[in-house]
Image 1 (cartoon, rainbow, N blue to C red):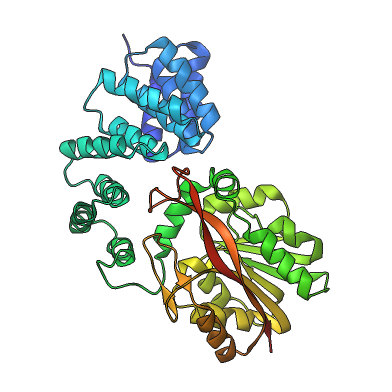
Image 2 (image 1 turned 60 degrees about the vertical axis):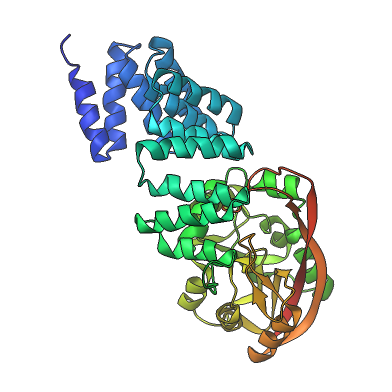
Length: 408
C-alpha cells in the first residue's frame, strides 16, 4: 500500500511539536478515509496533549474499533481516562495494553499510577518495579517506588529508592525535601517550587472534590468569617496568595473592589479562572510575586492553606507587610506545631507554633487581632505522602491556627 502523504506529513509535524499542523493533516486523511487507524489514534493523542481528554478518549476509542490490537492505543486511552478521573476504566485500558504487550513500559507506569490513585499500593509498587526491570535508571519510577515504600512504612527501602533516583539525575532539591520530612536529611526551610507545581498541576482536576468533600476542608469559610467578624470594610483591594482553584474567591468577592489571585500551578489557576470571580490571576511563586510589586497596594491579603509549604515564614511576612496599606489585614491559616517555632513532619506540610507567629508579627510591625486554634481539615490514616490522594481510612482532625493581623 502506498504511504498516505498527508499522514506522513502529519507525523513529521507532530514530531516537531506543531500540533495544529499535524491535526490538520490527520483530519485531511480522515476526510478521505474515515476509518484510518493512525489518524484517529494520533488525533486522540493531540487532543490529550491539549488537555481535552474527553475528545482524546473519543478519537482513540474510534481507532480501537478499527484495530484493537495496538498496545499503544489502549495505553493512550488509559491516559485520557485517568485524566478524566475514570480510574477503573483507565485500569482496564492499561491491562488491555499489557495483555497485548507485557513489556509496554508506558502502560506499566500508567497502570501503576492508577493503582496508586485507587489506593492499591502493593499493586502500584509491583507496576513500578516491573517498569524498573525494563529501565533501571528511570527517575520517575524510582521516585514513585520510593514514595510508595515510605507510605507502606518500608522506610529503609523507600529512602534507598529515592537516593538512587537522585544518583540517576532526579531533582536533588525535591528528594532532599522528602527525606528531610522523615528525618533522613536536613530539614529545608521551604518546599521546592517545582515540587509544588507538579503536585498541584497533577491534583487540580480532583482538588475540590477530594479536599472539600473527602477531607472536610473548611479554611476558606473560616478565614472569611474571621475577616468579616473583625472588619466591616467593603470595596477593598484583596490579594489571595496561593489561591489554588479559587476556593477563597467566592468568599471574598462580595467585599472586593479588586480581587487578585496568585499561584504557581497553571492547572490550579485554570480552575480558578473558571470561577469568574478574580479580577487578575498571576502564575508566580508567592514571595516572588510580592517582591515584584509596588508597596501598599492591598487592603487585605489572604493565605489559605498555603503557608503550610513554608517553614521559615519571615520572607512571607515581610512581603505581605510591604504589600499592605496601613491598617490593612493579613488573614492566614497554618497547621499547629508542637515545637517552639516550625517543623516538617512526614505529611510534608509544615507546622507552626503560635508563639512563632506572634514573634513574627511584632518583628514585621503587625498588630495581632486574633490567633485562634481550629480544626482545619481531616487527615487520612493511610495514604501517599507525595500527593494528597483519595481517603483510604478513617480521618483524624488536623488542628491549626487561624490568624488575623493588622498592618501598623
